[in-house]
Image 1 (cartoon, rainbow, N blue to C red):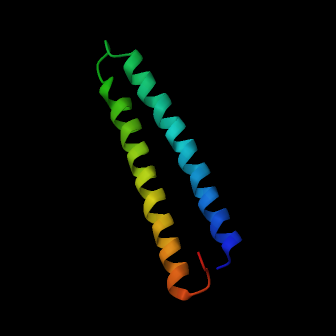
Image 2 (cartoon, one colour):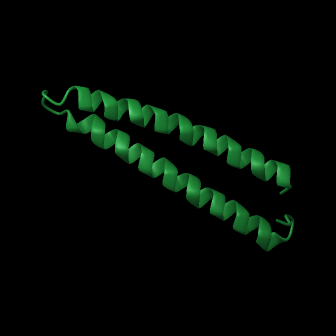
Length: 77
């Protein structure tokens, strides 16, 4: 895997993570604006979980790609 391909993959995954984080923030905001209604906790929980899961996936995937590229010797960082 070439260095450019690695960084494009990381950049693309970062964009996906940023999009899901934006949706999660909107979901949390919606839940906070409707606290007086039943079930207002659900958008807060869903938004928080989506942010946590995508951040964790980004971290693990970047670590895996860097480890894989260093182990194979194709990328000198």
